[in-house]
Image (cartoon, rainbow, N blue to C red):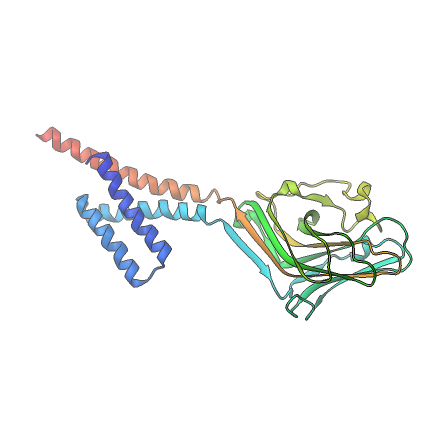
Length: 308
């Protein structure tokens, strides 16, 4: 059988499988799939055994390529029922300030649940910021299990209100935890106006994040660049590290005698994964079966020519 003809029949099989994957496994689609395969097999003059092997080979190869192309994992938590607060949330409060975080039942943009942090400055006149880290255990991804994390995007709604003058800008800081270590990146900002505003970040990779000292540092550490990092840096591992939990790092610098409230809702994480190496043997196995059939077909053709 000519190579071009053999290739055209393989493509017929693949097109049929793709149609089934895209349109769903309904009885009609399944009947069409096997009908097209049967036509191709008859044209190739294959035995039942070879038809089965060809279907298996193309199926394996397509399954591997489909797994490789299925890139996005969406993590979302609209109720914040699984929120975990950092055990030393007061560690970001300089003397004379306080910060507390909580889940509120109806403070969100649509009067639904939200994550809220309240900053109060009773007597502090320095220049350090206050902050609190909030992790949402419902937003957890393990690259060692689910596949290497290539990059991710995030989005949320943010509102800032205050008893004083609204700040000119307010950052949207994503917080990550892996193996007991914490990492953050400022991915967006708003000019607060008292209403909810959309914030988002896109194509974030491990290199965009800096490790921070969230638990063991003293008061004011967050606002002091010299104390931001821990004594022993540990690299954030998107490839084969442990589970990564996503959250928000709140930051504010309210003026003297001012209380500032920051609220988030509708936090979504969109993860783009790198295909697991385990799909490669599957793909290779499928190509191997197809190659075997091609060699057998070529061998049979040559034998027929020799006989003449």
